[in-house]
Amino acid sequence: MTPQHFEEPRLSAATAGDLPVSGEELLDLMRAVLARGVPFRFHARGWSMAPFVRDGDAITVSPLPQNPPGVGDVVAFVRPGTRDLVVHRVVARHGRDLLIQGDSVAQSADGIIPAENLLGRVTRVERDGRDIRLGSGPERIAIAWLSRKRLLIPLCVRLPSRLKALFRPRR
Image (cartoon, rainbow, N blue to C red; front, top):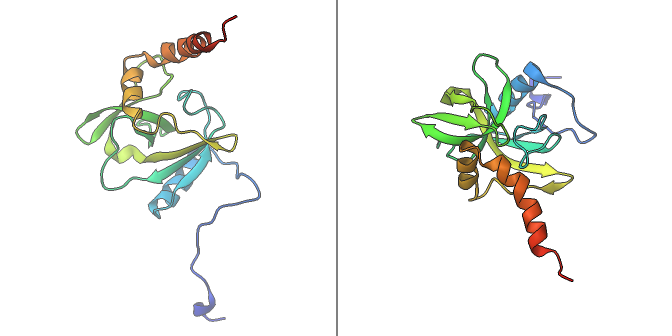
């Protein structure tokens, strides 16, 4: 066979199931896929973004366009020092760098994350075969403010029970 008979390698999605990778392998794979301009989908691990992203949700991270993420966007980044892959929300901007924090993290934010540590923006969250939109539309700015002020967790805990009581049928 001559070289012209070989096709250019292409990225494709596995449809038979998930490919179990984690840690450094996942980070390297994500970087390679995003560098080609292709969105990357994986399953979230952990609860730091609950209730908007839960453990096991499928997350799609898309390459960053020319404009940097804004307040309220959920981004994937590499935590400086540990080289961990993290998905959290932008709660403030400091020039090109971002202050990032998990929605359900009661402690301090991740800190100022340099722009070069950003991998991509979360563009889709799926749970049980359904898209989860809350937290990725225009409401994301309010959610970022509530998260930064440490008000999001108490609100998410108290609000559902109050709404149930409000809409409970009267006898």
